[in-house]
Image (spheres, rainbow, N blue to C red):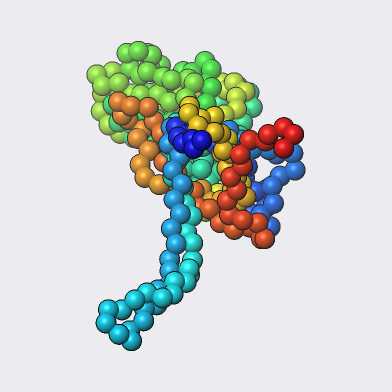
Length: 262
């Protein structure tokens, strides 16, 4: 009896970056990281061929086809907006930014403009500034400004806004913020200029059909399209996966599920 193995695909994508991109080796004990919900995963394979035709009589007839190259790619959308996935989209890395607790800090902001937002603690070493402000006091000269009337502050993000109509009525004034710092750490995704390489595993949990798992020993991951920071739908990271050959291994493996005793 002939049966049709119709399949409605579902599954999970897992990625293991190379610890050494040159040697293309995986980190010992590193394992594969779950990429989160991936509502679409499309694999494409195209072959470039040379075709030869006889031209001895009548119409030309093709008598030889030679495959010149194969191009294997995949596209995915990742809905897990994690620091690691953002780093894949950024072609970059992640880092942990830590700061120590301290007291009695101050910073002067010259030529402030009412209506603008200001970030505390910007430096070449810390371009996104400090976080976790405690006991902030903002002054214009010797005048202590009133929070909620002259300014609003976001101590978690380390920012403050000079309010229109407050004690700082015109542009060009200087203000000084004194503050303490809490000990904090945060994960930061940093853009780079190189695609991320590693191994990719797709584990099938199909709604219908046999589960077939796919393994790609050597892939590169790069951005592919727009990441909507504002939208009326869930955010998703569009990524392109370049599937390549690693040494004597094949580019792709598709494993059915094991059958006991066979």
